[in-house]
Length: 102
Image 1 (spheres, rainbow, N blue to C red):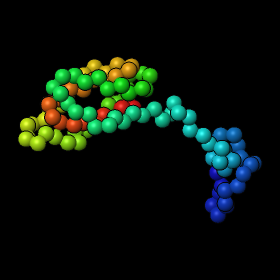
Image 2 (image 1 turned 90 degrees about the vertical axis):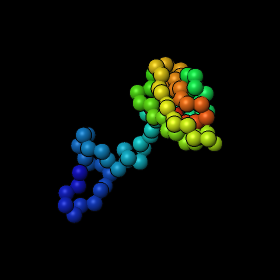
Image 3 (image 1 turned 120 degrees about the vertical axis):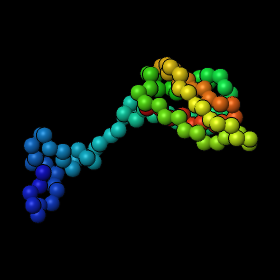
Image 4 (image 1 turned 180 degrees about the horizontal axis):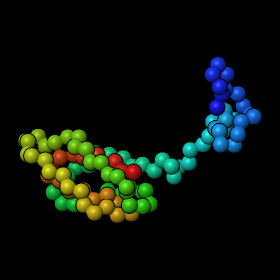
């Protein structure tokens, strides 16, 4: 790391220091960004399996209500047991949700 008043420059730094060259060559792999977001899904009252494509059980799932039925009924959204292929969500008929999983 440069001292006070010294600009960053490439080379000449210990191995434990990130250099400008290493920042220039930085790449992010797809496995580092495994994320799923569904389109709006209509709740039917029954469990709805939503394929997520992560290849593993999601570590975190967020369910967001995005729209409701024309005649208001109180929403109830319930997450089921998620699997390696699907996120399971059920909810009050007529409500639309978006599911995000990481």
